[in-house]
Amino acid sequence: MSISAVRSLVSLALCGLVITGCAHVRPSSTDASKNVVLLIGDGMGVAHITAAKVEGGTLNMERLPVGGFVTTHAEGAFLTDSAASGTALATGHKTTNGTISLSPSGEFLKTVVEFAEESGMSTGLVTSCSITHATPAVFVAHVDDRNKDLEIAKQIASCDADVLFGGGWSYFVPDTEHGGARKDGANLLDEMRTRMSVAVSTEEFAELPDHGPAAAFLAPGHPSRASSRTPSLTELTEKALGILSDDEDGFFLMVEGSQIDWAGHENDEEWLIEETLDFDEAVGVVMDFAERDGETLVVVTADHECGGYLVIDASLDAHKVTRWKFGSENHTATMVPLLAYGPGSYELGGIRDNTSLGRILIGHARRVAPGPATLAR
Ligand SMILES: [Zn+2]
Image 1 (cartoon, helix red, strand yellow):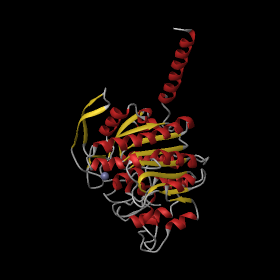
Image 2 (spheres, helix red, strand yellow; image 1 turned 120 degrees about the vertical axis):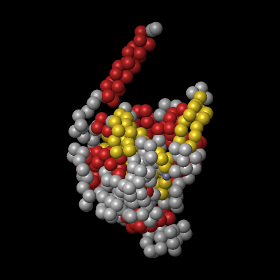
Image 3 (tube, rainbow, N blue to C red; image 1 turned 90 degrees about the horizontal axis):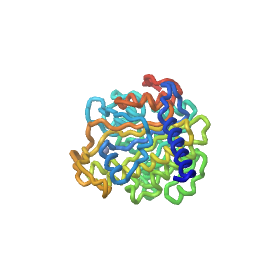
Image 4 (cartoon, rainbow, N blue to C red; image 1 turned 180 degrees about the horizontal axis):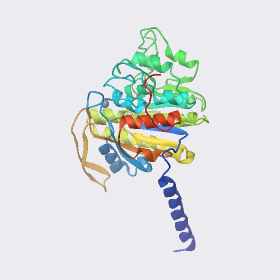
């Protein structure tokens, strides 16, 4: 071995030590973050990640050193939907299935986004479904029924988030205009344009400024599946990070890989792996940012498992899952994975309820030690 080869090996080893050292130094429980990014793989269970790793190789999710599991039950039902489990993550409180950030008796539940805004942080939501769908909605809207897309759109249009990227422009446009769905005559996009840049096509998205608040609703309803989605979840996430990181007070960003869940409902294994890998790519750009930044807490989890998906066997040589099974065409009640990186991440190891995770996120947004979130605004 030449001296230069030895030198590179030594420097590689040192590099490894430094990186490992950074990643594994246990910060104190009061370790504060400047920024928080929560990535939700909707319907993503452990088997989904297993299959994505078999077929896609080393995952970005492997860059998060802290691991745990999250229990997901709803109020009054062991099997949750995305509205109830999303509300738990966003507010730290259980609610009934179908409910968007209200308690079972209709009380207002303040969300991590609203707490973050109160602390002067910038906030953003990025999703691969309509922005009015349950998971993004729970962070900025308060509605008794997840199917009330028009009401949710109204609340989203008047929320204080700085970045809103997803689909669903039809819910913001009056039905007197082509493709519009609103019956109240309101053009919410025009209202939003008074405070932020708004794009409703891929071309307009490309023209959005790199700074300042922005919304992009890139389909009338839900955007298409990962293989034909432009811009990709990763591109949306990169753009969001660029805008939000301008704020010296820090930011909270939620990124959702929505269609992992739909592939589970359809028992479509190929689609499921495609969406999980697409989500993992978005995790990658967030981790690139967090590793550079050093003050960003990154949390990857799911709201529930979907499909009762099992990886029974696979070929490592062929990078292919060879035997699999679906046990359900709906969500299942098994615990979901939790991965974390960055300041405060060690607090998140182990098994916890989704409300506990929500309260810890709110603690970061409030710039205080985790504690019970308040019910009233
Ligand atoms: Zn679902």
